[in-house]
Image (tube, rainbow, N blue to C red; front, side, top):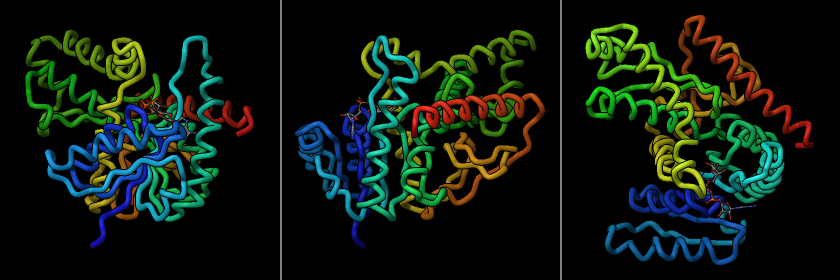
Length: 321
Ligand code: APR
């Protein structure tokens, strides 16, 4: 069976880690596209030259020509600029929307059957725009955000409780911004509620709630925490790893239930917007949004997160996209 073809649109920080992980995990052959001349060629040459050491057979190639993404099974988009000092949110939105429009037109032309994962920020707007411009069906266009936000939440819980993060399940819903909604009620360690473990640890309900609240706030601000430390650029290892989990579930039809940005049609009371929810990812892309009952407080938080996504999308429409 021929190897799957995976195209990366954007060969910056995240694009580079994606290419290396795809090769190391032998998920398929990689084509990395970037507008910057020689950058994707240089990066992929560097990665390809590790093949002997890492022991992979995947081909990893760079290009400045969209024709080379022809026939891709999967496309992962990280093209876009990070915010620079003095730039408003609208400026970033305009800059990246212009880029995303061109990306979507080209993916539509050269890889019309691909499943597409968007990572570029502002995520909820970018995935919406890609869907609109490409006209691809909703099962084939999704955004990466929730897996990373959930992984961050799980990591903080594991550190707090001194347990393996592999045993922590923690879910974050909503838009990929300050309004995201970590679901405390279902956070668990191998099925045991995290809140019960915190209450036992501190023998004090109030203290346990405060500790959880701090972890929730850290999760919401986790992207910014990394940006502040890095000084130039934003997180790239963890966003790449998160998109790889999505890619793997799709390419190998694993049907994992992963939190992703999916177009909702009434699930969780939201219609017509991309919002972070758990979904089954398989060979057909987003195969099913997994709905479950939220309590009143969780639903109110999700509603306000959806409202933030709606505002972002209407800003984008007001700006002509
Ligand atoms: N087409 C393709 N690639 C482009 C275009 C374009 N029109 N414009 C810019 N790029 C490329 C840049 O040349 C750069 O190599 O996109 C790449 C972005 O890489 P980085 O600036 O290193 O950003 P990265 O850390 O990879 O993040 C990419 O994902 O998480 C989000 O906020 C993040 O929007 C950002 C995106």
